[in-house]
Length: 429
Image 1 (cartoon, rainbow, N blue to C red):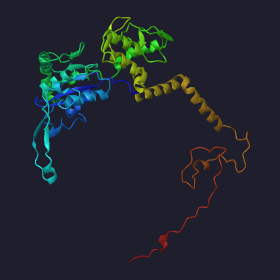
Image 2 (spheres, one colour; image 1 turned 90 degrees about the horizontal axis):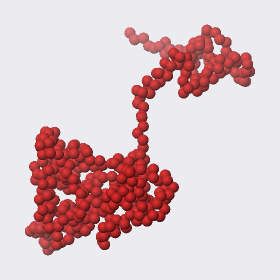
Image 3 (cartoon, helix red, strand yellow; image 1 turned 180 degrees about the vertical axis):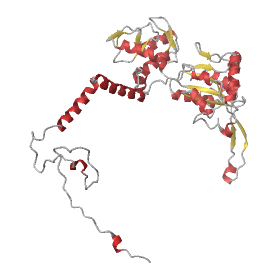
């Protein structure tokens, strides 16, 4: 079992070049950052979107497919969408395009001449076959039970999608979600014109509004943690006791509903309401307490981040604190000094420091006659000659004023002045 939680966001996307003649399919957990990489505004990005000095830039993100339960699931869907002509997810009788073999390539060596080498050409990626294969992948048994949804970011791509649905042979499963995030046509043209001047994608502002973090689940996680504080609650399906602190449980996403249940119990109940003999997990269902319909992935995602979140959960539930800047700390220290100088009474946080310093001052001001001097020590006379005593060994002058009474008297060394070598120098005429 994978110990990591369900990712907050992961999607597959379809890019279109500025001329509309080239397309690219990829996957990412952050579509805004990935689009900036493809357009050369950030480091990274695929080689195919930047070759020939970026002649196809800026790329525009036309639609995204969201709702993948893991990164591996998104990569599987991406590969099947890119290799729609050879993927095993699509049955051969339903495949819309196949690879074509061209003439044999001329060989140079004798061994290569014996073998007929064939060059297999991939079908060209266009808007029509991209949308048609996307519609087909969403209907195949490998993906039709996944909690996927399609978001369209361009109006013309959404119109092409609706035209394909009308003439398609099959239909999507019931309850499949489709969203349109593009603005009005006049606003969209204005954004496209402004983006062309800045050499960036017109959908960049739309992608900024998509939440790619767990912040949307914070109120639900807080409610589930509050419910877990109670000792025992009953499962809303089977009615047995449920220890919330020791077991993994599912909580209703509604704010005013406190229903909790075992994961197997709720899955069996929802599968019975929507019989699917080949399915192991439900797609959606109705809460027995609030009678609202919810998607299975929404309940499981909240439970996974609550039980396996770790550092991500700690960062998400951390209360925002006030962080002092350097300017604030300096002003606080200056105010403390002004308080001591004006009022004469130090604040409580400085009393300990002042008491320690006063203790050192008392030791320095102690009378040397009270305590006898140890062996090897003698008292120095406080006169003016000691004010400018210089250490012969180090050459560093001592502090101004009389030395400490308990300080040890330095040894007086005999000063020897060597003769100058100039006396033996030769005089040149």
